[in-house]
Length: 134
Image 1 (spheres, rainbow, N blue to C red):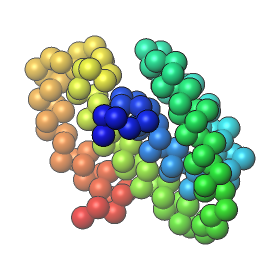
Image 2: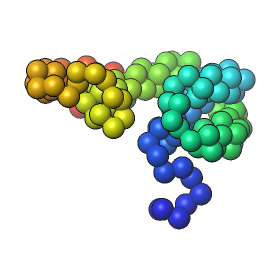
Image 3: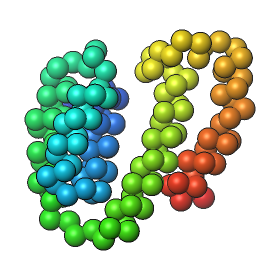
Image 4: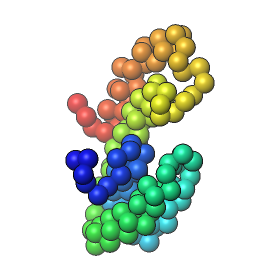
């Protein structure tokens, strides 16, 4: 896997996952613009330019082209969007407590860690209700 021609960091890998979801939810002309905007806004400044370029210039055109002919009914697109929100809830919660991803001040203190531990079942239950995971 380390020899593959793809980025090996979490931000662009998750960016590719989000790109897949967005391309299945929106028509190609909207997905392409939306993903370029999201890449510029959501990828952190320390993301190497080559990795951001890979996502926007190499991966994005290919996934947009590959999914532009999909005739997915609107209800299924909405369902997919709700599932994506559930995935993002879990990712945001997990990354909040992993200081190497989102260094949020105070999240390394004992009270906040305790609160986070207490909230795990509720956050997971909410996210599971969105994703349909049982």
